[in-house]
Length: 153
Ligand SMILES: CC(C)(COP(=O)(O)OP(=O)(O)OC[C@H]1O[C@@H](n2cnc3c(N)ncnc32)[C@H](O)[C@@H]1OP(=O)(O)O)[C@@H](O)C(=O)NCCC(=O)NCCS
Image (tube, rainbow, N blue to C red):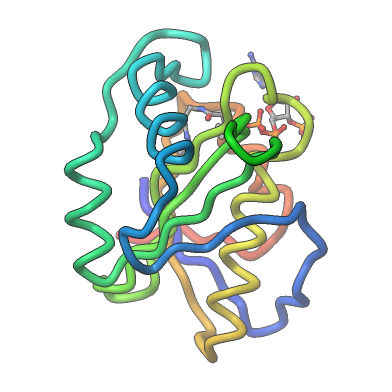
């Protein structure tokens, strides 16, 4: 189900620090960490799943998407915590492919990944965004505690 997000009265929220990419310019460590995580991708209930791949990442960043990455680590390694995209080509900026690495789940990062993109979309002057939230995906739906989501037809 697609939801419209009303950002008219939205006040930017404080979130974890993140990296933002609007070009395919990653360090080898970043690419390796993303690729490893994609190969071990687990859905919200721990089932393996293939969502997108490295060629999609390149294609998207050449076609008006932004990629947000959360992680930490010293030079020479990256401990990846999560990621998400905004697709700027839709009717409203579209929040898609939110992912929290299994070890970092249930600590609010999944919600942060929504709010940091809403912050960015609002900052760019939009009053609406959209997101797909499946009924079965209860961990993903926790974000709807905020009263700014309405079902789209
Ligand atoms: C959906 C996802 C991003 C959530 O990440 P997260 O960091 O665990 O999210 P948060 O910690 O912000 O919130 C998790 C919520 O799910 C709840 N939850 C956790 N396990 C649950 C379960 N088995 N059943 C129901 N709810 C559950 C938590 O209690 C929490 O809700 P609360 O804040 O009301 O207590 C993560 O599970 C994931 O990457 N899933 C695979 C990809 C995906 O489905 N993306 C969503 C696309 S919109």
